[in-house]
Length: 283
Image (cartoon, rainbow, N blue to C red; front, side, top):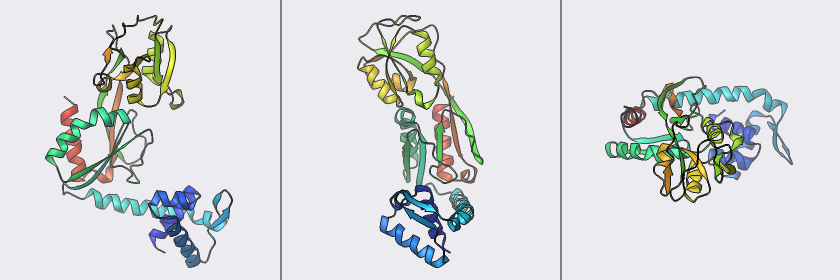
């Protein structure tokens, strides 16, 4: 049994459709179907029941699912181990972060790194999704919460400061009031955010006008005069037509955590990037 066929079995089990499995593995729909049929013929078992809602594991398929996942973890561990031994400063380095961190914090770091290591190709993966380090979906990840995954080497990179901003043509709102102003906050479905809670407490009479899960969108809406926003300083200080409101206290900051899988700790290009960002962003 070839590992490549087991990967297809796992992809179909997770996606429940040939198309979803194909997108996950970057293979065509017919290729997935053909390889899956070949695997079932080779094992002499029907591993999936074809239904109107998708592919459902049969008893035989469910019985070997855990074994297939163990094969996957062993294959990924081998891949990480071999990749982590690479000392050459070339190849691809995949970095994951929030949208605003990738757009406003990382550019000077990557510019410095690329000048020094021109043979390393940087891939930036941004968004709300938490990429899996064990599956090598990313090599290096930046988050506002600590990592709880096993085998991750992590450190607190810095504490990000936040500020309150309004359109530069508007008067500054009164703390403790906020009458006549609107508020721009984070999407509540993503959980509770200390800066959003702080903003609503400091301007209790302001009307909630807009919620967004994207700090860049919040900044652009604020610059257009939609309302008051609390933003990371690298975002708010950079976007045109914004001014930071002078306050006696600042919004609560957030720690930025940096993490990578322990198997990748000897990867030359990763170590070089960690050294670069530490030198530029920390005192």
